[in-house]
Length: 397
Ligand SMILES: NC(=O)c1ccc[n+]([C@@H]2O[C@H](COP(=O)([O-])OP(=O)(O)OC[C@H]3O[C@@H](n4cnc5c(N)ncnc54)[C@H](O)[C@@H]3O)[C@@H](O)[C@H]2O)c1
Image (tube, rainbow, N blue to C red):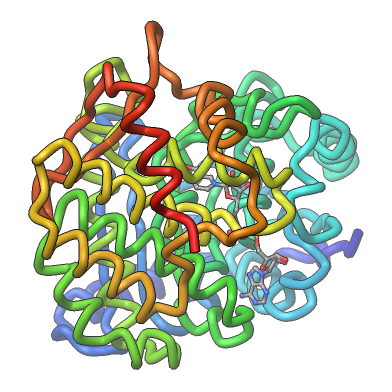
């Protein structure tokens, strides 16, 4: 644990207001501040996207929070790279607190680690007006959000995502939680952040495989909701893979806007609500992850294969044109992601059985999100088992 210097510095409120006014006037360029609002009445919040914004996170958080005590939660990969800038900014904005660095990876998303963080919250003397700040990927965001949801029956939290997946997906929407030894994300709560601060420059250090995994989710948004976004990714796949910050910022903004709109309409993923559409590729993808014991594929890679399988199912159900399935698979491949299962992956029966372990299996049977065209999706149930198995079988190298 690294303690942030406890000395109080000037209140930067006036400075922030000036900066915000300046940002609003900027055009659509790489350096511009992009603001997406998640409209949820009293739980509404902003997603602020801008290269370099990490250094302004403190004042931006201060203007939205009552208290000035915080615990920054990060991991040992991200903390040393970006922790000092974030902590310095928080400190200059008058925050007082500490930073907890956890081991990186999914292994930290447990109740045991949550308990460790409750201890750190108490050590840092957090009160009900204090906040947690999650600096890292989806693991840190989900875990910190869960601790924030439960500590003193719920305190504020701010998301500072540093993976592409977290920036355009997991940091938005308030799903928080930890894993149970028998089931991923089994213990959790809906708890919306007060602010999401996205600095695409932090992606500079993200391993290529993690970047591609995040791109899978971006492609997913294109398929389920936004044909223009899909075409943009098709046309800019090379700059996106090269981490061009203008291209990345545009994709993050567009995906964040889709997620914000869907979450605003259906915060808690009600039966039949639009939030379920975000699970395109996930019934297959989660089964792949579970059947391979989370060892073979990153989440986005499993979703990439799952999306191709969902597209095949959509063609089988005569909802999607085969050429659109071809476009989806071609873009997944161009993004350096797998489109098919490997020959030595678990067999079809094992994968089919794994579909039923997903906590999102609707009462009464499997539910798949299928594409009707690029840019539109819907949920289907009662898909014959033979058809699903045929799709699994055909989706192998
Ligand atoms: N809450 C939601 O709505 C939601 C949605 C999708 C996924 N998730 C969850 O998100 C998690 C996966 O998130 P993830 O893909 O971000 O993985 P992650 O948080 O494990 O991060 C991946 C790796 O990248 C490293 N890393 C992060 N940022 C970095 C940076 N800028 N530079 C260098 N290294 C960096 C991390 O240390 C880690 O080793 C899963 O637990 C999944 O269940 C949640």
